Length: 312
Image 1 (tube, rainbow, N blue to C red):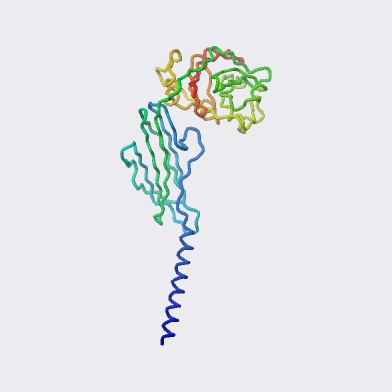
Image 2: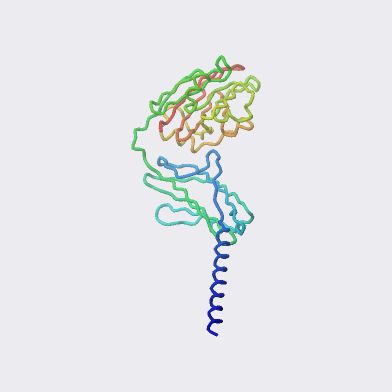
């Protein structure tokens, strides 16, 4: 009898061990959902530090079902902000379904020096597993002098090689210089934009260096397949912005309060048309600037541009 009890207990322990093993194994196959930020211009991808002021903030997140065998479809998501004192819900447990869901929102945020906003996204699946991702925006007055670097009335042409004029900016010294493609090949990461006149469309424009690697430029004179070039985004400025007398913060605000250009098919906000008198704000990384088109040559290559850059 005693032997039977021992065997029974041993069998029970073995059964419990197997059950525990199976449960652990099943748990490992539930990775839970994830949150991904797409690599798109203007989308907040991480923590940011900004000068005090008002900014247009663009969040775009993709909620994804976990990759585990036993992961469940998405159930709901929440979005909140903590302006420094307490967490404030913006969206709470909004129902979603399927294996992926994209949430895209743009809104204005205003901050004074020292203020910190923390935005948090949380997604939950039907197994009640969750994932969260937070983005912190800190407003901090610069302790450095605010320099505006200027190149007025620059003469831009297509150059003898028909590859356009390249605007180089050296952050350390604040120097703005015009270069040919051959010269720009020596410092591709310092080129803010490329001026180019298209005889086909009879249009003058300034172009983001990075997009010249895109297939839409294959075979064109301005094509520039250089992996070190950077992305520049252009915006039309709001009414009331003036080039003369613009302040350091005014240059930044001109971009943040502007509207993305969409002047050329397939280029998005990475190519802006140059017409006499137009003001164009631009941003490359943490470099903000503004361009005034002084004049363009009718039916031929050539433009006079004035540029101001808020030195980062």
